Image (cartoon, rainbow, N blue to C red):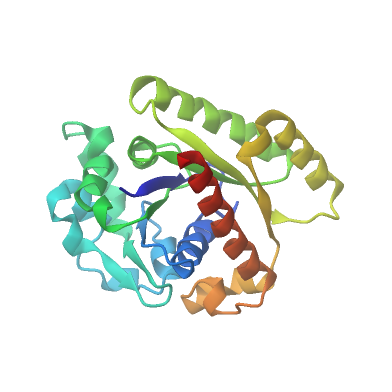
Length: 258
């Protein structure tokens, strides 16, 4: 069965979608079968995977409405060598329609149950808000990766997100775990970055990834070319960081199953 990871932070601009796309490509590079599910109506993960969201006939919205049809909605990312359940603006209507359905918070879980046998990892790119789409993602996931910048306000946002995760654990998905906290746009010359890192390690210990994602021009450029950074500039620091992150995640998961 696939390991299902929600990549989420209700604070925007922390590298959530960048992480989703580039981690998917890096895990695929390591020989893993990967599905990326775009749960953000902006469709940035879809576009960053080289798929034109405006040309989609079917998307994750259709899967949420009819989970048994999901396999036919999946698109191959030729740019990233992984599969994508894509999103476009249609997903904006999903919140309203989900409220009318039975098990409204479990629809994405039902979607994944139809297809997880085909994959080693399913990554879910969540919207930057705590809404019904994010709730569906947390209910469907085994674990959560939290990308965050090492700045003061990020710690406040982390507290709110942890409260939400705790409520999901208590009421719907008791097996949900924190996969890891990922420091993004990291600058070791910044004293605040070092201080926030210290606090993260004090509070979360081994849940903080040793890998950090640096500020990197190539990483920022890659989405405009519709490719993960490793296919834009494999030698860049951003590409090397996400490959290292994929390796760290694979190692941790192996250790957890021993």
